Image (cartoon, rainbow, N blue to C red):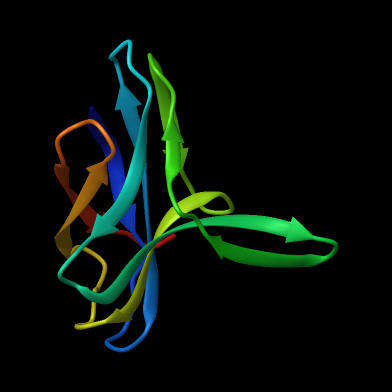
Length: 117
């Protein structure tokens, strides 16, 4: 498994941000992302943005399904990695490491670059 086009929104220390990317699963085995980690936040969660009536809500996800031979997109308005309680400012041009842990696959690390949305 591998990620491409990883980026994050800018954020200030103590605030929140989101990480977005495309995860490629070229294998014939389905899997699940169980959690994400990063040193730039006190808490890191898998989230899904949904519309309930006229209100947009972010809901934590216990896991994210990764079908075999597929890609899963983490994008604004959908799935994303939520960084809660940033431990430092993350400014446009900065980059940091994110790790994804899976049910069956070894963990993967990737670098997310902070971009202006």
